[in-house]
Length: 80
Length: 258
Image (cartoon, each protein chain N blue to C red):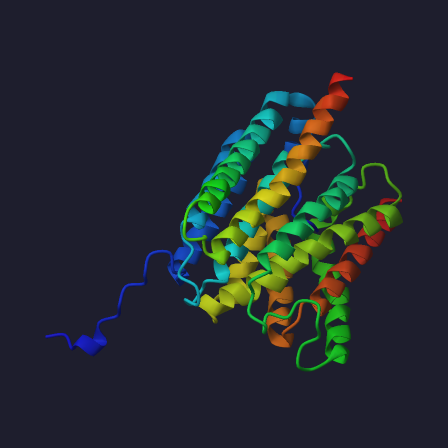
């Protein structure tokens, strides 16, 4: 068993309510932007930020960015 | 009058303690339960948990400094699962597709780990013990099939060997995160409570199913594999055990369905 989406939620996202999946995507984007913004601000500050904090921000931004790209590609596919 | 020696100093802000870990598990559980009512609400709660944990990073070298990245990894993975596209594709295909970002999360969370948190190296007892741990997937498959076989039999129209292979791909990063990293991370803060707490975090991810047998199966699996991971000091055996378990349960579900 894998902790995936429960069938009811999956059906809901797949067919029932595109707004719900869009909102989840907006939350993901907001978190991604926050983490990227913090990273940019920290790197422009002196002294250079702690390595642990940069790693933590990478942990949030990299996987969320991958999913964000997939969401954008899906939207383009839907448009076409 | 209280002797100064008997005064327990308060944990510095952000240092993980047992009660903070329990609160973390409770928030995760609340987000998963909220999923049944409001998907955006669950996503917001998971994102808030990530933001809160970001500001909980203790000083370098402090006890628990390596724990926070692992704790952040769990809500990030759940958020990925929620926001990833492809809700209309068969469940095993989506799970296997998510394996890449989940693996990235696990690898990034593992970057600052202490050397004794072995992941893909065998523990002090060598490969033979890891093979024995892999065989633990066989007895574990029986209760999991009885309790959650129906939920796992959702192959989305795919032949069962293909579905089992895709799910086996999906469980590898899962195991790296929930057993390989979470168990030693919690063990660094609360050694006695590490296995039950890690099993609780894993079972919380199944609360959205709103099914007591499924959550019980997840907790039991998480507890057994967590104990084995802690006992053997490596994640190799438990990853193999999960692959064995998935193959057996999918095979049994398919055979009995026909």
